[in-house]
Length: 318
Image (cartoon, rainbow, N blue to C red):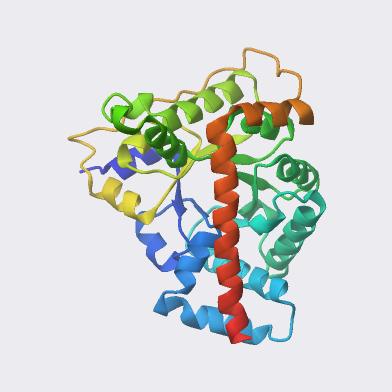
């Protein structure tokens, strides 16, 4: 019996969305993504307490920011022992509106990986897809530091990332779905907004088609899923990053009884790339998208809160 997870892997690169590297191997993902919330969740588990304590002890006396980066990279290094591909490590969300500080932090993170013997081809630096974050990624990509632009909700964000030559973007399917469902209230029809009609799925499909039609090399990785239906509706996307809970559901599902069908297809480049978005055009387009404006701000705030909590855990052990 071929599971739905096995079948999905024939169309799409499967990525594990977790910092729990001990749980990861059973799903055999190629890549893995982390963020402040996932690392915070992992370090509070008893099995990861020694990793946190040992890392803090080894760098006691260093600035808090430096110790945090050591913890993030330590998790990344352990993850890279489990997967054959790339790990995404996120820059502090509190730097989301500071291009220079984001570039400096990204260089530092990559330097820690390189000092540990890991090449740049195995690391993606995650940065929030603000205008400032996208410009930081533009500079980093020129240096060979590849980036994963996250908290992406608007088509304008995807356009600007393509203009900047970003390696990969992570459009957030589930959070888009959440906003439209909440906005509709009692009028929401779950069945009518499922599968290919899901607003989050539609957003990713539009971006994927735009990139392929215009020959934009940026990889599209759907993220933030609420259910297996959203994942299956995006079969064929370049990559999909999936939580362990949903990976387990896909692994347990009989793909012979319910085969995975490819929905996103590669299209030959048929149109020249449009003119790049100016900063003013980007900001206006983002402002016009109430969902994206709200979810981007909410996401940065949430990641910043969890980054602060991680700071607190480390500070308590210094």
